[in-house]
Image (cartoon, rainbow, N blue to C red):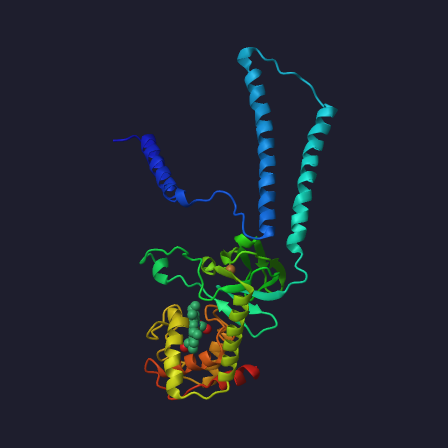
Length: 378
Ligand SMILES: [Cu+2]
């Protein structure tokens, strides 16, 4: 048998090896330094980072060099005797002045880069970026274009049932699109808790705080896809609200924006249209599956949220049902206010579906106009 101390030694070696294994396994893909990014600001930030890093290296080598050399040359076995002196004015002045001068010298380039980063004046495009638990919303100011950007990594990958893709947890259904060679300002805020909008390649990282609007900006010359994440712990799905920015040519951007605007106009027009029961019900079925089934069950049997099958609200008065879906639950933030997240047509379809699926068979339906009227009446 191993003695106690030997056993704990073996145990710590095993734990040590286990802890290092994932690091070794992924060493090939590791990048140790910060990214240089693709904007002039991100390059300034990188240069600044390298400059300060080199200054720290020189200081480190000098200080440790002096320490090691003196310890080696003046060691006890060589008969060194410590000199005894107190209150050396020259020394004290020196070790105060030298670090102060170094700090001031470093503050100059840092301040000028910071000034540039915060100079968000005169943008050509303004985009309101709103953090939600757990997705981002983008509103292109001065246009009708506005959408949510949701994580698109399949849950099978997250649950380890499928091999993880290249952009695991860094991919969305609808990316933010901006043009090249354009000053774009991001007005960053949040709807619920504090988030942070962070895209390393653009050197943009701004806190998204409810009730405040923080500005940031970028000017990208190179087309490409740049990815980021929420950088402020914002609840259980903090790691599931990535950012994907597509930088495209000005012509492609104009085309994309026009398409999006047409889409928005279409939804608006459809809000006054009357749909047949079948159109509502079958449309609601797919919308329910993507938006609600995760919590209420694919067959309305419930899960995180209560069952929709036989639910008091889904089989009760329409107004209570509208209120719950449009405004969310006052008691449980898991049941979000979908009035802000889905358009009236989608809401009418989902609610009609819930009232008639899973044996609820209420026989009634909700039209988009009912949603618009209900929201206006609040
Ligand atoms: Cu967040």
